[in-house]
Length: 351
Image (cartoon, rainbow, N blue to C red; front, side):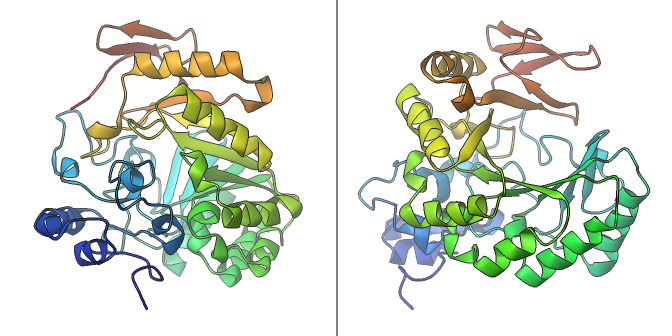
């Protein structure tokens, strides 16, 4: 198997594929020792070997900048652990839970907010006993209306396991919505088979799939075909994008991406401000810049194409729209009033 046909997972793989110079191998090895690396053939094919700062390379090829940690950065930047009643479950909001069923992904984004919790070494796939405990918690909590599958990437599950999970959730009457967050249709579209789609829709719950993509070049013909298989099965698709310095922090790219989403039957949903994950400061933009970009984006696009610009408050305080009246810009970030009326000072943690 050649470098073009396999998932790249090591510094030597990256050098062999031409994505890094041999002189950088030691630095890359230091990064890959700390954080997981995986670049699928689909994404590797989009990387320009002559442009290491291109929008696809920058998302997936590790750099020495990841070894620099800002004082404000946190291993658990949005407070998953503080809101986890049983392993694999996060209950941050009364009516919904996150179910982190797998700890692996087809690719590892260099800006991942769970980078300390995912990967072949750091990630954790729930055991049968742990999954049963999580389902028991959901069963015993009638307020839970929505279960959100995340991880890792839950589309890494086999069709058999997806079907079994949907059947288990079908036995919980107060759960009405099952949402899946995934990169797979974009970065490994071959995994979205007819059998997988049939398993997703095998239960009686309303299924929604959140699609993570950050640049219009990611929506290849193969990705669009995989997304069409999901949409044709009657599954609503919504987008999730991270605002990333040097990748999509300009109005032309964001405009093109939101239009591409709609053309692929994906409703633009969230544009995330970069979380305070370790070694990701070089990806974040100032909050004021993000608000200005999204304000201009909203002026350009019809209502159906406008994402909300959101920030997950550190410390498990939840998500806030940065476009709301509860946000006041400051010289180095913003002040935010959360749903409980508490004031949070958020400072731009930039290189």
